[in-house]
Image 1 (cartoon, protein in one colour):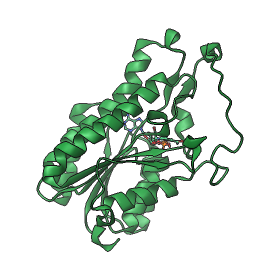
Image 2 (cartoon, rainbow, N blue to C red):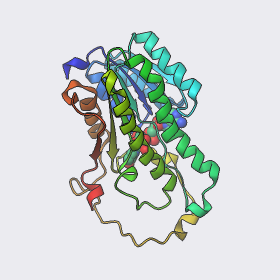
Image 3 (cartoon, rainbow, N blue to C red):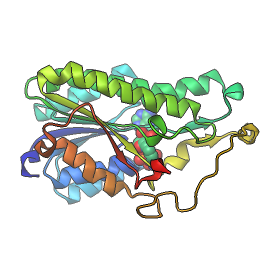
Image 4 (cartoon, helix red, strand yellow):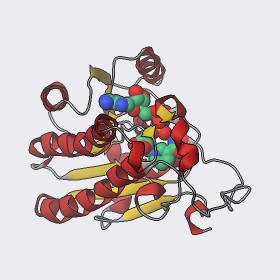
Amino acid sequence: LPELKDKVAVVTGAASGIGRAAAIGLAQQGMKLCLVDLKDERRDQVEKELHELKAQVMTADVDVADANRVKEAIDAAARQWGRIDMLFANAGINGVLSPIEDMKPEDWDQTLAINLKGTFLCVKYAIPHMKQQGGSIVITSSINGSRVFSNFGMSAYSTSKAGQVAFAKMAALELAQYKIRVNVICPGSIQTNIGENTHPTPELSKIKIPVTYPEGSQPLEHAPGQPEQVADLVAFLASSASSHITGTELFIDGAESLI
Ligand code: NAD
């Protein structure tokens, strides 16, 4: 994908999992990167790995739910590199998993603030820097926001992920005039560190839904997907190989959502 060389990408949730793999994949295509995550030693490690690849990298300590910090970081990236061509709005948490009856309003708010409002803020503050030359925005939703609603206790998560799908489509239509494409990816289970930000409550066992999870829940590979597989999709969506694709949900789940 040679046309990505020296273009600029902002990647959120870049310290771990899908964001880390995408940052490495985009750097391998020659992109300059702004890595956005909470202050985290894992992000320093990713920055080191990228320097070893001779990538041009800057980092920003940002809670994506904090409007001022998001704006500062994206503006700083644009100042440093002169443009922004790609935004990968990917940071997210599973958050507290609880029956709706027991869900604390503040836990609901936290999941929605990071996953949904965070996505809105990153897109909003990237637009002024992408308008001149156009570009690509990719948002990480989930099969749990579009096809699969049977994961116990995930009402807040699934709502946030469904919201991202609607938001991506609105943004795709609105930003087409600037040649900014917006797509949303819906991964199935991917092997990452998301378990660290997953907090099941004891009350979960109260949910009685007649659902059975099949063994080997990804028919294609009988295993969770790998972040690098998602990173390949992100690089494709960043590049002009996907120049006519916008407003689309792309599932990357080994057919997990079809069973
Ligand atoms: P991960 O925990 O490995 O990485 C997520 C990163 O986001 C972490 O580095 C974390 O520090 C960062 N982050 C969390 N809250 C943040 C905040 N407020 N501000 C800035 N950064 C923040 O998890 P992952 O699986 O790579 O998750 C990436 C995205 O993929 C998420 O949006 C998640 O919902 C989505 N997703 C994951 C899976 C899966 O099975 N792993 C499936 C579908 C969708």
